[in-house]
Length: 504
Ligand code: NG1
Ligand code: MG
Figure: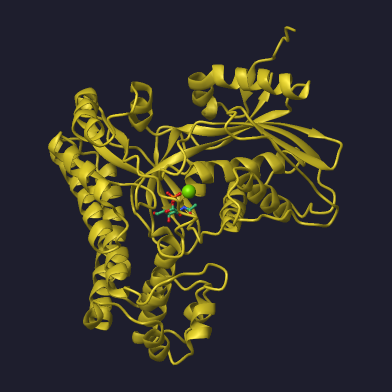
């Protein structure tokens, strides 16, 4: 049966680039939707994945990060219907269709211990209903998803999905909230899955501007500044290379991701105590207390650096924090036991653990390596600020790219040695990449596997990628097909942020 399908249109013309790139995908998603549900969808929601250029594991410390949206994305075609059920299907037959009913007034339960692709949708769905206060009489929804972000490799397929579900649910229920509210809702929603994430991925997905990376500040409030990457001839590109080591962030959360969050939080409490500001209301009432808040409070008021240009101010303040952290934690390079931390803070282990959310996000560790985590966080924050400054300097010489690359390399070293979130495959891939001509190479996303990102001149990309295939992939993963390889390693430029598409 032939259907005449109206053309998909972008609500806002800045988002038209995604349509140009993926017009065919939108049309075939629409056709598949009609095939499945027998009617046109009302709209298609789109949210992209991201690659983090620099600023790893510091979003939850309150420090700025510098990611960009990528072209691969999550699309959900949606029709609002008059029944108390949400139907969710995927164009990829690997993911079986799901449906869940809802009772007026009841929230949707998410069992994070049972891994299922629909959990991410449920997170976004539940968060969106809570945000718009529509838990009593939401509409039913027919949904069909098409995702192109590789899964579990640090490119934020999860956040793309959650953000998309949040937008889809809000739109289906006739509500439009500000971008900031959508971000906030998506961040809280994704925590239902069991990881205590920062806000980088959702902010990038929702708020990225076309052709720009995003300098994201979280504190004192969320602010996104689009930053153009230096434009040169020949231009530069970021090559993403997947180690093919899957890192299951949810399953490993207690010893990896959530543990790092806890280590930085306890570090912030102890540092505030050391600086005699823990009782100040800015620190006492902060939930959570982050390194950034401690730094701001310590320098609040009459610090002479207040009149300095931004980069100089950051440099002075972060250097001072590094020194203070060194003085406080330096003798404990083996880490602190939970009771050592509690004693220092004159509190009990139980109440300290509650303060850092361990009841909601359990962790497992004998010792917290606070010195190393603090050193990473403060030095990484400085690298982010410097990276942005170079991008905005207007300098497009090779020296400028070497300087950017060197910051990326330092970030990788810090992730490997201080934050301990790299792995042998990531280290090896970065090594090979630097020898193959990247200006800089590092892991991207949470780490412990997943993807790496490399700054490369665009006219060298093909040769660069060929070298990685030969030296890394054919050695470690000779079974990969050419198609697999094209998904594993590819060049990318900044894509645009999330949008809702309707039909002309
Ligand atoms: P991944 O695991 O790559 O999606 C996570 C966090 C980010 C950030 C990075 C590390 C979520 C949704 N994402 O990303 O907030 O902390 O790790 O920089 O938890
Ligand atoms: Mg993720």
